[in-house]
Structures are given as C-alpha cells and as structure tokens.
Amino acid sequence: MHARTKALETLLVRLNSRFGERISTDPDELAKVSGDESGLPKGNPGAVVWPMATAEVALVAQEAQELGVGLVPRGAGTGKAGESIPLGGELVVDLSRMNKILELRPQDLYAVVQPGLITAELDKAAKEHGFMYPPDPASWESCSIGGNINTNAGGPRAVKYGVTQRYVWGLEVVLAGGKVLRTGRRSIKGVAGYDVTSFIVGSEGTLGLVTEATLHIIPAAPVVETAWLSFADPVTASRASEHIFAAGITPRMLELLDTTAMDVVRPKSAFRLPPAGAAILIECDGRDEGVMRDLERVCEIALARGATESAIAQNDRDREGMRRARRLVSGSLKEAYPYKISDDVAVPRSKMPDLLTRAQELGAPAGIKVAAYGHLGDGNVHINLLCKTADERELAKPVRQEVLRLAVSLGGTVTGEHGIGIAKRSELGFEQSRELIELQKRMKLAFDPGGIINPGKALPV
Ligand SMILES: Cc1cc2nc3c(=O)[nH]c(=O)nc-3n(C[C@H](O)[C@H](O)[C@H](O)COP(=O)(O)OP(=O)(O)OC[C@H]3O[C@@H](n4cnc5c(N)ncnc54)[C@H](O)[C@@H]3O)c2cc1C
Image (cartoon, rainbow, N blue to C red; front, side):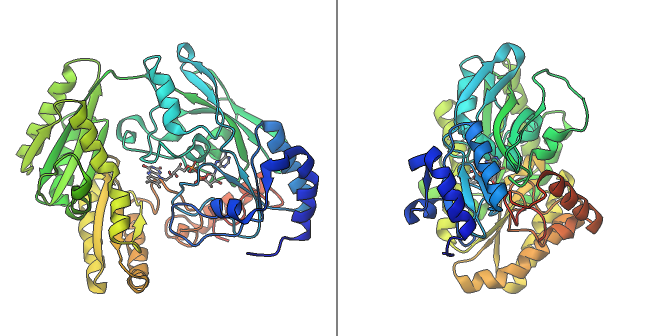
C-alpha cells in the first residue's frame, strides 16, 4: 500500500469532523473497497468515506478538488472490468449507504432512487404495484443502481426490454469541485438540449458521482412461461434462435449454455440438465394464455431447426430451477477454472455462429479450452478462456486479444455490458478511431478538468 500523500492527509483532517466514523483508513475497511469481481489485482485506496446525502458527496468533491485528491465512486463492487479499483491512493466514495427509494409513482411511470439501492429491490417494490424495473443483471441481488447506471448494465431481460440506459430519465450528479448538476426530466418525453443524461450513463464513474436517479418503471407482464431447449451444439442453437425471432416472437429471455457450462452447473442444480452439446433457456411473457401458445410455437420451431429435446416448466419451482442453473454458470466455471478469462463481446445476432465457431478455433492452437454462455438473444455471449493455472492464463492472453478483434471484425464490440474499466483500455482502439477516443477525452475534460474523478478508467491512458 502507498504511503498516504500530504494532500490526502489534509483532506482527511478537513472531512473528519463531518464524517467521524464514516471515513476510514483502517486496512480492513480499505481491503473491502480495493477490488471488484473482475479478477484483476486489487488496487490501493488511500481512504474510504460513506456519505449519507448529496450535500456530503458535494462537500467531499469540493475539498478533494481543492487539494487535488482523486475520488473513486463505488457502488456494490460487483464490476467485471476493474472500473472501481483505485489505482493511486484515491479516496473511495462508497455510495452503498445512500440506498433509499425516494418516490415510487406508477401513475407517472417512474421511481426516484438513491444510487446505493440494490437493483432487485426496485423491481420488488415496483412489483407490489403491478409494475417492473426491467434491467436485471445476473448480479441484481447484489449490485447497485449507481453501478448499473455507470456501466449501462444489461441482463437476461434486455433481449426484449433493453438495457439500463432506456430506463434512466434523469440524474442528479455531483461534479468535480462539488457543484450539483441535475439532468433530464420526470415526464415520459423530453428532448431539450443535448442528451447529457445518456452521456453519463455508462461513463464508469469518470464524469461525476451520481447521487439520485429518476428511473422509468413499466407495467409488469403478469404471465411468464419458461422452457429449456437442448441442442447438439451451440451453433445449431444459435441458428435456431434466429428462426424464433423471424417468426415474430420476441422472448423476454434467450440464454445460451454450452456443454462445458452445463457440466460445471449440473452437480449443483436442482433442475436436471439434459445431456446435450448446448441448451437455450427461453422465456416469453405477456398478459394471457397467448404466452403459452408463443412458447409452444418456440419449441416447435426449435425442434424443427435441430433441437433434440424441449422441456416446458410446469410450475414456478421448475422455472426457478432452470433460471438458477443459468445463474450458477459464472461462479461454477470460476471454481473449476480459477484463472479463466471471461469476456463479454457482442456481435450482430446473425454473426453469432461465426463468433462461436471461430472462438473455438482461436483457442485450439494454444491448447485453451473455450466455453460460451450468456445472452444469446441479444448477441452478447460470454466467451470464456478456461485456465486452471497462472501459466495457462498467460498463454490465453493473446487468444483473448484475437477474440476481441474477431468480435469487432464481425461488426460488434469488445464489451457488450461490462465496460472498459482498466481491463480493456488498450483494446478500445480495436473498435474506435483515434478521433473518437480523443473527442471522448475532451468531453471528460469538460466535466472534470483536473482529472480527479475515477482517474485512469474507461479511456486509454
Ligand atoms: C455474478 C455476476 C453476474 C453479473 N451479471 C451481469 C449482467 O448480467 N449484466 C451486466 O451488465 N453486468 C453483470 N455483472 C457486472 C456488474 O454486476 C455490473 O457491472 C453492475 O452494474 C455493477 O454495479 P455495482 O453497484 O457493483 O458497481 P461497482 O462495481 O461498484 O462500480 C461499477 C462502476 O460504476 C461506478 N459507480 C458506481 N456507483 C456510482 C455512482 N453512484 N456514481 C458514479 N459512479 C458510480 C464505479 O466507479 C465503477 O466505475 C455481473 C457481475 C457478477 C459478479
């Protein structure tokens, strides 16, 4: 750990009377905010503060600016790209204690929430009124709204309902220096000025500290039906899924598991995963019995296009068993292959068979086994390079570069949902021109001329 700088020491003295026990340099507390779920090495926070109100965040930002101390906003720390890892002894601003739902207005289709709210809590509260908050990252029982906004998180339901950005109507943001900026609106429509709200969404905490969000909620579909489709291989599964969309059916979830993903999950799963080369977990939703008709049609199409088996959930227990099998994949693969490299590339849906086939081919010469699972329905599949040792991981690194380039060459992106963080700063250039990157650097400077908000993230250094 770095020695604390004089500037940070002075900042701590200045903030101490306001925050008391809510500011800390205790090594145990710092250890908790030094990393995330990316598997990247931990960083070195200089201190951590837990504000309870916008005014407190503004005070921190004002004093930090005066002293030139870097700030790292932090939600729940479930990020997968190192975006909340402090790199240079910064003050971590942990927003997890600002976690209230301030307003819930189904009649106006919005909720106003604080950033530390756990995502699933908002959906749960909306459900009591027959509404839903659609973005559902697989981590939604542990990640926060502030983190979702700053990574523009998606989830299984994105295939039908879209990602976080679609649901952010307005923000309150504390800027570098402590000014409080309000963006957006509480009306359904609004096109005044540049769309600054959307610019902040996905900015990885580099433009300011989000202290409040106005989020769109929608009437919940009361009927949900679920099926598990088995295939000989992922490419057949992928091609079959194209025919489902072509038939005019937009499922609310269409997730892929390849055979390796199923193998690691099988021992822990209450749902008995049929032996197969690949599987699709699919859900349709709506208001009435038409939903089951759609799902039956999905099964017919899949069977006509190469599925070897289809199983429709008969009750909520079956459904939850199938969903849980999908949720278990990430952790179970990590247990089996502790040094694995997991990426979140996205490609146009029709290019998915190319991605799946060529990713396997890229791994083969280095002896790296490749697993694929995730959001097949929106072309965002997690390509995992499976490594059991640190040496294997070194061998896999060049393969990963090739997988990222492959995704871009197919018209896609190096990151469909996790972001650039520090994990892909060099690889942003695979996808974006120098001019575009320079423009973004100038936009960052317009928000944060001193470069103190989450330094070293999202853009190449
Ligand atoms: C098992 C597992 C499954 C996952 N599944 C998905 C998935 O399906 N889809 C998906 O998109 N992601 C997924 N993720 C990744 C992760 O959960 C998301 O990126 C999530 O949005 C991060 O939220 P967080 O609260 O943990 O944010 P953090 O990790 O704390 O921070 C993420 C970024 O947001 C910034 N930030 C956080 N709060 C604020 C704030 N109030 N103001 C300004 N900046 C802020 C941080 O500085 C950082 O740049 C998964 C992660 C795990 C571990």
